[in-house]
Length: 382
Image 1 (cartoon, one colour):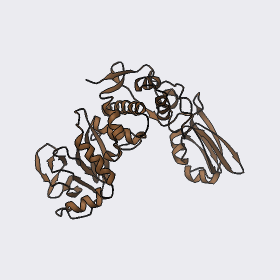
Image 2: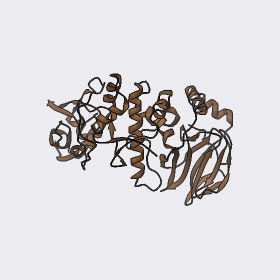
Image 3: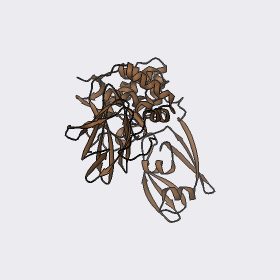
Image 4: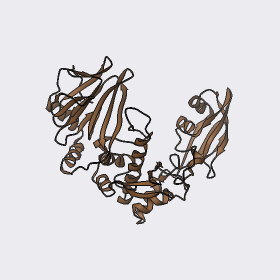
Protein backbone atom coordinates (compact mmCIF):
# COMPACT_ATOMS: atom_id res chain seq x y z
CA UNK A 1 0.00 0.00 0.00
CA UNK A 2 1.29 3.49 -0.81
CA UNK A 3 1.71 6.07 1.95
CA UNK A 4 -1.13 8.49 2.74
CA UNK A 5 -0.37 12.17 2.17
CA UNK A 6 -2.00 15.47 1.22
CA UNK A 7 -2.42 16.08 -2.49
CA UNK A 8 0.48 18.53 -2.61
CA UNK A 9 2.91 16.40 -0.55
CA UNK A 10 5.09 13.96 -2.47
CA UNK A 11 6.43 10.65 -1.17
CA UNK A 12 10.20 10.51 -1.27
CA UNK A 13 11.84 8.11 -3.71
CA UNK A 14 13.70 6.11 -1.10
CA UNK A 15 10.49 5.50 0.87
CA UNK A 16 8.63 4.22 -2.19
CA UNK A 17 11.47 1.91 -3.18
CA UNK A 18 12.14 0.54 0.30
CA UNK A 19 8.51 0.11 1.31
CA UNK A 20 7.08 -1.23 -1.92
CA UNK A 21 9.75 -2.76 -4.08
CA UNK A 22 11.87 -3.66 -1.07
CA UNK A 23 9.07 -5.76 0.38
CA UNK A 24 8.74 -7.61 -2.92
CA UNK A 25 12.31 -8.18 -4.05
CA UNK A 26 11.19 -10.61 -6.71
CA UNK A 27 9.33 -7.74 -8.36
CA UNK A 28 12.61 -5.97 -9.05
CA UNK A 29 13.64 -8.91 -11.23
CA UNK A 30 10.36 -8.73 -13.11
CA UNK A 31 10.74 -5.00 -13.75
CA UNK A 32 14.31 -5.56 -14.91
CA UNK A 33 13.02 -8.24 -17.27
CA UNK A 34 10.49 -5.70 -18.57
CA UNK A 35 13.24 -3.16 -19.23
CA UNK A 36 15.44 -5.53 -21.24
CA UNK A 37 12.73 -7.22 -23.30
CA UNK A 38 11.33 -5.40 -26.34
CA UNK A 39 7.63 -4.58 -26.38
CA UNK A 40 5.32 -5.26 -29.30
CA UNK A 41 2.61 -2.99 -30.63
CA UNK A 42 -0.91 -4.36 -30.66
CA UNK A 43 -4.48 -3.51 -29.72
CA UNK A 44 -4.89 -1.38 -26.60
CA UNK A 45 -7.28 -2.84 -24.03
CA UNK A 46 -9.23 -0.98 -21.34
CA UNK A 47 -9.01 -2.92 -18.08
CA UNK A 48 -10.79 -1.66 -14.95
CA UNK A 49 -8.42 -2.01 -11.99
CA UNK A 50 -10.59 -0.25 -9.41
CA UNK A 51 -14.15 1.00 -9.90
CA UNK A 52 -16.08 3.61 -7.94
CA UNK A 53 -13.64 3.78 -5.01
CA UNK A 54 -13.22 6.72 -2.63
CA UNK A 55 -9.61 7.17 -3.64
CA UNK A 56 -6.86 5.39 -5.55
CA UNK A 57 -3.08 5.60 -5.25
CA UNK A 58 -1.06 6.15 -8.42
CA UNK A 59 2.58 6.61 -9.38
CA UNK A 60 5.09 5.84 -12.10
CA UNK A 61 8.48 4.11 -12.20
CA UNK A 62 9.71 6.86 -14.54
CA UNK A 63 8.75 10.52 -15.05
CA UNK A 64 5.18 10.58 -16.37
CA UNK A 65 3.05 12.95 -18.44
CA UNK A 66 -0.33 14.01 -17.02
CA UNK A 67 -3.08 14.72 -19.56
CA UNK A 68 -6.77 15.51 -19.48
CA UNK A 69 -9.43 13.47 -21.25
CA UNK A 70 -8.90 15.41 -24.49
CA UNK A 71 -5.20 14.61 -24.50
CA UNK A 72 -4.01 18.07 -23.44
CA UNK A 73 -0.92 18.08 -21.25
CA UNK A 74 -1.59 19.22 -17.69
CA UNK A 75 1.84 18.61 -16.23
CA UNK A 76 4.29 15.93 -15.16
CA UNK A 77 4.78 13.48 -12.29
CA UNK A 78 8.20 12.73 -10.88
CA UNK A 79 9.79 9.30 -10.93
CA UNK A 80 8.53 7.07 -8.09
CA UNK A 81 6.37 9.81 -6.60
CA UNK A 82 3.06 8.65 -5.15
CA UNK A 83 -0.28 10.49 -5.26
CA UNK A 84 -3.84 9.96 -4.10
CA UNK A 85 -6.60 10.59 -6.64
CA UNK A 86 -10.01 11.54 -5.25
CA UNK A 87 -13.39 12.63 -6.64
CA UNK A 88 -13.78 16.36 -7.16
CA UNK A 89 -16.96 17.99 -8.42
CA UNK A 90 -17.95 16.14 -11.57
CA UNK A 91 -14.41 14.88 -12.14
CA UNK A 92 -11.28 13.80 -10.30
CA UNK A 93 -8.44 15.55 -8.51
CA UNK A 94 -4.75 14.62 -8.78
CA UNK A 95 -2.36 16.86 -6.89
CA UNK A 96 -3.13 20.36 -8.26
CA UNK A 97 -4.92 19.12 -11.38
CA UNK A 98 -8.68 18.70 -11.69
CA UNK A 99 -10.44 17.33 -14.77
CA UNK A 100 -13.32 15.10 -15.83
CA UNK A 101 -10.66 12.54 -16.75
CA UNK A 102 -6.94 12.36 -16.05
CA UNK A 103 -4.49 10.15 -17.94
CA UNK A 104 -1.01 9.31 -16.67
CA UNK A 105 1.54 8.13 -19.24
CA UNK A 106 4.93 6.88 -18.02
CA UNK A 107 7.89 7.82 -20.19
CA UNK A 108 10.86 5.69 -21.30
CA UNK A 109 9.15 2.30 -20.97
CA UNK A 110 8.07 3.01 -17.40
CA UNK A 111 5.36 1.13 -15.54
CA UNK A 112 2.38 2.54 -13.65
CA UNK A 113 1.36 2.01 -10.03
CA UNK A 114 -2.40 1.62 -9.53
CA UNK A 115 -3.82 0.83 -6.10
CA UNK A 116 -1.41 -1.82 -4.83
CA UNK A 117 0.33 -3.18 -7.94
CA UNK A 118 2.53 -2.24 -10.88
CA UNK A 119 1.05 -2.42 -14.38
CA UNK A 120 2.28 -1.84 -17.91
CA UNK A 121 0.74 0.84 -20.10
CA UNK A 122 -1.13 3.94 -18.94
CA UNK A 123 -3.90 4.71 -16.49
CA UNK A 124 -7.09 6.69 -17.07
CA UNK A 125 -8.73 8.09 -13.94
CA UNK A 126 -12.35 9.19 -14.13
CA UNK A 127 -15.40 9.89 -12.05
CA UNK A 128 -17.91 7.05 -11.86
CA UNK A 129 -20.85 7.47 -9.52
CA UNK A 130 -19.54 9.00 -6.31
CA UNK A 131 -16.10 7.49 -6.64
CA UNK A 132 -13.01 7.15 -8.81
CA UNK A 133 -12.47 4.47 -11.45
CA UNK A 134 -8.94 3.58 -12.57
CA UNK A 135 -8.65 1.99 -16.03
CA UNK A 136 -5.40 0.47 -17.24
CA UNK A 137 -4.86 1.19 -20.94
CA UNK A 138 -2.54 -1.64 -21.92
CA UNK A 139 -1.21 -3.33 -25.04
CA UNK A 140 -2.97 -6.64 -25.67
CA UNK A 141 0.20 -8.73 -25.85
CA UNK A 142 1.64 -7.12 -22.71
CA UNK A 143 -1.66 -7.71 -20.91
CA UNK A 144 -1.34 -11.39 -21.74
CA UNK A 145 2.07 -11.67 -20.04
CA UNK A 146 0.21 -11.24 -16.77
CA UNK A 147 -3.06 -13.04 -17.58
CA UNK A 148 -1.31 -16.27 -18.59
CA UNK A 149 0.59 -16.23 -15.29
CA UNK A 150 -2.61 -15.44 -13.35
CA UNK A 151 -4.82 -18.05 -15.00
CA UNK A 152 -2.29 -20.91 -15.30
CA UNK A 153 0.78 -22.08 -13.40
CA UNK A 154 3.98 -20.61 -14.92
CA UNK A 155 5.73 -23.95 -14.35
CA UNK A 156 3.34 -25.80 -16.67
CA UNK A 157 4.57 -27.21 -20.01
CA UNK A 158 5.07 -24.40 -22.51
CA UNK A 159 2.48 -25.80 -24.94
CA UNK A 160 -0.17 -25.60 -22.21
CA UNK A 161 0.83 -21.98 -21.55
CA UNK A 162 0.70 -21.24 -25.26
CA UNK A 163 -2.82 -22.70 -25.34
CA UNK A 164 -3.77 -20.38 -22.50
CA UNK A 165 -2.23 -17.42 -24.33
CA UNK A 166 -4.27 -18.09 -27.49
CA UNK A 167 -7.47 -18.56 -25.52
CA UNK A 168 -6.90 -15.49 -23.33
CA UNK A 169 -6.05 -13.33 -26.37
CA UNK A 170 -9.21 -14.49 -28.15
CA UNK A 171 -11.37 -13.99 -25.09
CA UNK A 172 -10.02 -10.47 -24.47
CA UNK A 173 -10.73 -9.40 -28.06
CA UNK A 174 -14.19 -10.95 -27.97
CA UNK A 175 -15.05 -9.12 -24.75
CA UNK A 176 -13.61 -5.86 -26.09
CA UNK A 177 -15.69 -6.06 -29.25
CA UNK A 178 -18.83 -6.82 -27.27
CA UNK A 179 -18.24 -4.55 -24.28
CA UNK A 180 -21.35 -2.82 -23.02
CA UNK A 181 -19.46 -0.51 -20.68
CA UNK A 182 -18.60 2.98 -21.82
CA UNK A 183 -15.30 3.19 -19.97
CA UNK A 184 -13.74 -0.28 -19.94
CA UNK A 185 -13.86 -3.69 -21.62
CA UNK A 186 -12.51 -6.04 -18.94
CA UNK A 187 -11.88 -6.18 -15.23
CA UNK A 188 -9.26 -8.10 -13.22
CA UNK A 189 -11.40 -10.92 -11.83
CA UNK A 190 -12.74 -14.30 -12.96
CA UNK A 191 -15.79 -12.47 -14.35
CA UNK A 192 -13.54 -11.73 -17.31
CA UNK A 193 -9.91 -12.82 -16.82
CA UNK A 194 -7.64 -12.62 -13.80
CA UNK A 195 -5.04 -9.88 -14.29
CA UNK A 196 -2.47 -8.86 -11.65
CA UNK A 197 0.01 -6.76 -13.58
CA UNK A 198 3.74 -7.39 -13.25
CA UNK A 199 3.19 -9.60 -10.22
CA UNK A 200 2.22 -12.58 -12.38
CA UNK A 201 4.65 -12.12 -15.27
CA UNK A 202 7.31 -14.80 -15.71
CA UNK A 203 9.89 -15.78 -18.31
CA UNK A 204 7.61 -18.66 -19.33
CA UNK A 205 4.54 -16.45 -19.77
CA UNK A 206 6.56 -14.08 -21.97
CA UNK A 207 7.68 -17.09 -24.01
CA UNK A 208 4.13 -18.39 -24.37
CA UNK A 209 2.76 -15.03 -25.51
CA UNK A 210 5.61 -14.29 -27.90
CA UNK A 211 5.42 -17.83 -29.26
CA UNK A 212 1.78 -17.28 -30.25
CA UNK A 213 1.85 -13.58 -31.16
CA UNK A 214 -1.40 -12.55 -32.84
CA UNK A 215 -2.87 -16.07 -32.80
CA UNK A 216 -6.61 -16.17 -32.12
CA UNK A 217 -9.50 -18.57 -32.60
CA UNK A 218 -12.14 -17.55 -35.13
CA UNK A 219 -15.36 -18.84 -36.61
CA UNK A 220 -16.48 -17.44 -39.97
CA UNK A 221 -13.91 -14.69 -39.67
CA UNK A 222 -14.86 -13.48 -36.18
CA UNK A 223 -13.12 -14.10 -32.89
CA UNK A 224 -15.00 -16.63 -30.80
CA UNK A 225 -16.22 -16.64 -27.23
CA UNK A 226 -13.23 -18.61 -25.98
CA UNK A 227 -14.63 -19.66 -22.61
CA UNK A 228 -12.33 -21.72 -20.41
CA UNK A 229 -12.31 -23.29 -16.96
CA UNK A 230 -10.05 -25.23 -14.62
CA UNK A 231 -11.31 -28.82 -14.91
CA UNK A 232 -14.46 -30.32 -16.42
CA UNK A 233 -14.52 -33.57 -14.48
CA UNK A 234 -14.05 -35.82 -17.52
CA UNK A 235 -16.15 -34.20 -20.27
CA UNK A 236 -16.79 -30.59 -21.28
CA UNK A 237 -20.30 -29.33 -21.98
CA UNK A 238 -22.26 -28.09 -24.98
CA UNK A 239 -22.65 -24.39 -24.26
CA UNK A 240 -26.44 -24.36 -24.68
CA UNK A 241 -26.82 -27.01 -21.97
CA UNK A 242 -25.23 -24.69 -19.41
CA UNK A 243 -25.81 -21.17 -20.74
CA UNK A 244 -28.38 -20.03 -23.30
CA UNK A 245 -27.46 -20.07 -27.00
CA UNK A 246 -25.89 -22.82 -29.05
CA UNK A 247 -22.48 -22.05 -30.58
CA UNK A 248 -20.89 -24.39 -33.15
CA UNK A 249 -17.42 -24.09 -31.62
CA UNK A 250 -18.36 -24.74 -27.97
CA UNK A 251 -19.27 -28.42 -28.14
CA UNK A 252 -18.78 -30.97 -25.41
CA UNK A 253 -15.66 -33.14 -25.84
CA UNK A 254 -13.84 -35.78 -23.85
CA UNK A 255 -11.53 -34.14 -21.35
CA UNK A 256 -8.16 -35.38 -20.11
CA UNK A 257 -8.20 -33.89 -16.64
CA UNK A 258 -8.28 -37.08 -14.57
CA UNK A 259 -4.94 -36.20 -12.94
CA UNK A 260 -6.11 -32.75 -11.89
CA UNK A 261 -6.12 -32.11 -8.13
CA UNK A 262 -9.71 -30.83 -8.54
CA UNK A 263 -10.92 -33.77 -10.62
CA UNK A 264 -12.72 -35.18 -7.58
CA UNK A 265 -13.77 -33.33 -4.46
CA UNK A 266 -16.27 -33.52 -1.62
CA UNK A 267 -17.81 -31.23 0.92
CA UNK A 268 -20.18 -31.69 3.87
CA UNK A 269 -22.69 -29.13 5.10
CA UNK A 270 -25.56 -29.29 7.54
CA UNK A 271 -29.06 -28.31 6.56
CA UNK A 272 -28.93 -25.31 8.88
CA UNK A 273 -25.59 -24.17 7.38
CA UNK A 274 -27.03 -24.35 3.87
CA UNK A 275 -30.14 -22.50 4.97
CA UNK A 276 -28.07 -19.60 6.26
CA UNK A 277 -25.90 -19.51 3.14
CA UNK A 278 -28.80 -19.68 0.68
CA UNK A 279 -31.32 -17.65 2.67
CA UNK A 280 -35.10 -17.60 2.62
CA UNK A 281 -35.79 -21.32 3.12
CA UNK A 282 -34.98 -22.02 6.76
CA UNK A 283 -33.14 -25.26 7.47
CA UNK A 284 -32.64 -27.18 4.22
CA UNK A 285 -34.39 -30.57 4.13
CA UNK A 286 -33.84 -31.67 0.54
CA UNK A 287 -32.27 -30.71 -2.78
CA UNK A 288 -34.17 -31.62 -5.94
CA UNK A 289 -32.44 -31.17 -9.33
CA UNK A 290 -34.74 -29.48 -11.85
CA UNK A 291 -32.52 -29.28 -14.93
CA UNK A 292 -29.39 -31.36 -15.50
CA UNK A 293 -27.02 -31.52 -18.49
CA UNK A 294 -26.44 -34.84 -20.30
CA UNK A 295 -23.16 -35.14 -18.39
CA UNK A 296 -24.75 -34.63 -14.99
CA UNK A 297 -24.07 -30.94 -14.30
CA UNK A 298 -26.94 -29.39 -12.33
CA UNK A 299 -28.26 -26.19 -13.92
CA UNK A 300 -31.28 -25.45 -11.71
CA UNK A 301 -32.04 -26.91 -8.33
CA UNK A 302 -35.05 -26.79 -6.02
CA UNK A 303 -34.07 -26.17 -2.42
CA UNK A 304 -36.70 -27.31 0.08
CA UNK A 305 -36.46 -26.13 3.69
CA UNK A 306 -38.44 -25.70 6.87
CA UNK A 307 -39.27 -22.11 5.91
CA UNK A 308 -40.19 -22.64 2.27
CA UNK A 309 -38.60 -23.60 -1.02
CA UNK A 310 -36.96 -21.85 -3.97
CA UNK A 311 -35.42 -22.68 -7.31
CA UNK A 312 -31.81 -21.58 -7.59
CA UNK A 313 -29.46 -21.46 -10.56
CA UNK A 314 -26.17 -23.31 -10.79
CA UNK A 315 -23.88 -20.30 -10.34
CA UNK A 316 -25.80 -18.91 -7.38
CA UNK A 317 -25.91 -22.28 -5.66
CA UNK A 318 -22.23 -23.02 -6.28
CA UNK A 319 -21.09 -19.63 -5.02
CA UNK A 320 -23.40 -19.63 -2.02
CA UNK A 321 -22.10 -23.00 -0.77
CA UNK A 322 -18.51 -22.61 -1.97
CA UNK A 323 -18.63 -25.64 -4.28
CA UNK A 324 -16.06 -26.12 -7.04
CA UNK A 325 -18.69 -27.04 -9.64
CA UNK A 326 -22.29 -28.21 -9.97
CA UNK A 327 -21.19 -31.58 -11.33
CA UNK A 328 -22.00 -33.46 -8.13
CA UNK A 329 -24.21 -36.00 -6.42
CA UNK A 330 -25.58 -35.34 -2.96
CA UNK A 331 -26.63 -37.63 -0.13
CA UNK A 332 -28.07 -36.76 3.28
CA UNK A 333 -27.96 -38.40 6.67
CA UNK A 334 -29.28 -37.00 9.97
CA UNK A 335 -29.40 -33.45 8.68
CA UNK A 336 -25.95 -33.53 7.05
CA UNK A 337 -25.50 -33.26 3.29
CA UNK A 338 -22.51 -34.81 1.53
CA UNK A 339 -21.53 -33.39 -1.88
CA UNK A 340 -19.35 -35.63 -4.06
CA UNK A 341 -18.27 -33.69 -7.11
CA UNK A 342 -15.91 -33.50 -10.04
CA UNK A 343 -14.15 -30.64 -11.77
CA UNK A 344 -13.82 -26.94 -11.11
CA UNK A 345 -15.77 -24.29 -13.04
CA UNK A 346 -18.55 -24.21 -15.62
CA UNK A 347 -17.16 -26.95 -17.88
CA UNK A 348 -17.34 -25.00 -21.17
CA UNK A 349 -14.49 -24.65 -23.64
CA UNK A 350 -10.86 -25.29 -22.78
CA UNK A 351 -10.09 -27.29 -19.66
CA UNK A 352 -6.84 -25.94 -18.24
CA UNK A 353 -5.91 -29.17 -16.49
CA UNK A 354 -6.84 -31.09 -19.61
CA UNK A 355 -4.52 -28.89 -21.66
CA UNK A 356 -1.81 -29.50 -19.06
CA UNK A 357 -2.09 -33.26 -19.53
CA UNK A 358 -2.16 -33.06 -23.33
CA UNK A 359 0.93 -30.83 -23.33
CA UNK A 360 2.71 -33.35 -21.13
CA UNK A 361 1.93 -35.99 -23.75
CA UNK A 362 3.67 -33.89 -26.38
CA UNK A 363 0.71 -32.28 -28.18
CA UNK A 364 1.40 -28.79 -29.59
CA UNK A 365 -0.82 -25.91 -28.58
CA UNK A 366 -2.65 -25.71 -31.92
CA UNK A 367 -3.89 -29.30 -31.56
CA UNK A 368 -4.86 -28.67 -27.94
CA UNK A 369 -7.06 -25.67 -28.71
CA UNK A 370 -8.53 -27.41 -31.76
CA UNK A 371 -9.67 -30.25 -29.51
CA UNK A 372 -11.55 -28.00 -27.12
CA UNK A 373 -12.99 -25.58 -29.69
CA UNK A 374 -14.59 -27.70 -32.38
CA UNK A 375 -15.08 -26.02 -35.78
CA UNK A 376 -12.96 -22.98 -34.83
CA UNK A 377 -9.92 -21.93 -36.87
CA UNK A 378 -6.57 -20.78 -35.54
CA UNK A 379 -5.96 -17.43 -37.24
CA UNK A 380 -3.22 -14.80 -37.17
CA UNK A 381 -4.43 -11.24 -36.61
CA UNK A 382 -3.53 -8.63 -39.19
